[in-house]
Length: 223
View 1 (cartoon, rainbow, N blue to C red):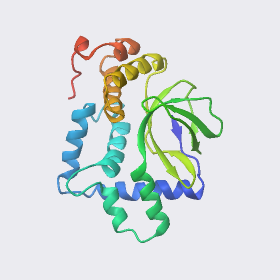
View 2: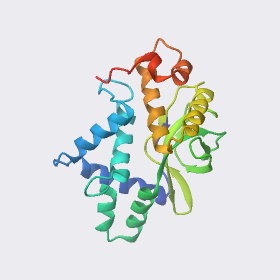
View 3: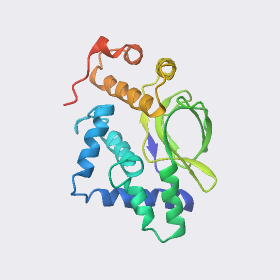
View 4: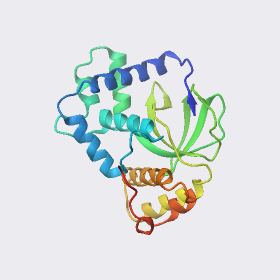
């Protein structure tokens, strides 16, 4: 749904720094990446390579591993920052490391500007976004990464879209989980797992899947 447009130099630098790091992660042979992926899938569910969610699921994992992983050596992004000598690249890495995943409702957007309301934390953002959000309607719910850089809030690389028409059901579930004292990260993982259910139970109304208790349908087959 997102098409790439030529961004300004700040956007280009921000995304290039992340892409360089992701490329390095592909050369990991220590087993750390595989172990992190296993833990990630325990929290959110396992997607098979032949499924539509494979690419956004994998990209979201790479962002999480690069900038949130709390393994013995710390997040790869923090390690890269320790060895970075270019001030602007270092600033971009710090921005990624300070970024946060968010479950947002998209507002009525204009070229270059996207209003977003964070369901887990209650904050409102005006996101600078040079890419075109084709097919995205006001009221749609998306899991994104929000990054503050050079005086602007920007989206990360990955967009995990929830089915159109499920916003009210998702908000109900989020409020229920917040009332139980769940953290934003726990809520994000829980709602992502429900998104996976919509792929596994295509014969069921997605709204019902977001509202149903876990035990009502059982766990989807992770493959």
